Length: 508
Image (cartoon, rainbow, N blue to C red):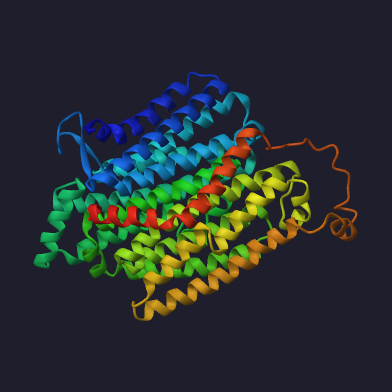
């Protein structure tokens, strides 16, 4: 059974080797090879999750069989395992469901480049999840940034290139701040290994030394990762990055990439520095109120957005705010709720982007007003999109309902923050309902009503448009599994919450 402890290392290296191999494969071979690799990583992550949950322990893997500082270390417990399973699952389902979108949006000769970027992105997310070394975390942050930039640019339309450059500039600012924070922390502690840093920081904090310096370090690392995850007021790159990308890229960027940075931030708070030291620094209050602002402002911006894809992108700003609100409360329950919301939002947002691709690409729909009546033509896709919309709003039985319930419950007993959090949850949920349910209602407006209200511009002949149908067996399988996962998180939330709570105990 000890062989299973190698699975985190195998997962990271499989993705990296897959990227190398895809560079010499044709587009079809690269596509199939990437699918097999992602499925394999998903299975390895599931087995490792079962193993770590049953054992109740975490394990350190020495890269090259040498302990730090001569060698590198990765660490795996059930919290890391469930996050790795989440990342690999969303990546696998996005690639299989978005196969047609990849063919339509990306030139044949560049398809293998797309799969190289997917492999690099997955590898970097897994490395950030499992790493036990802060500098290694920084290295894979940069790899993830390059992969994310490529995923935006690979569509090769004018706006996507401009968006990718903007994304790169803003992301490099975040990376730079994070690196400065790591450098200063190394200066204070003399360590890069997370467990060693925690011991030294606890000693420094206990003696009352370097309090201001620690606060600066925590602030720099928090701002750096907040910029990269798109927290308000660092959210300006999100609408174009998600709205202009290929739909699979949008699914990966919104579903997993931003969550990887937040998971690394949780590792730094809980495992590297210690949540008590973080709380004393006052940074948690900043996270809380920025999260609250993002929840409301992101929803208001989504409400006023006319472009359908950009509306879904703006909603991500609000959902990231939910996660930072939970982190900002700073209790075990609230951090667990934030982790659960990472999973709920990641799966739901991938479902929204992928399921809407058929009626946005197939009917050339850009604006929300053009959705009217499309559910009668794209029945299956509209149904799956509606499930995702209901989950974001917080309907019972779905993942979004449980995460909002957990976040609200974790705020109880937190003084003034309790009422601020509950009010923001209520306002944001109402706004979610307005702009998401509006799109669902538009989809199901009867065709005869649409024809009766249509102007000559809407009634123009579109027979010359190329027909882009996403509908194929793998597309159906992919988004069906995302729908089922949404219900599974809603109905089987107890098991997931137990894993998260157990993982946080071992994590700490």
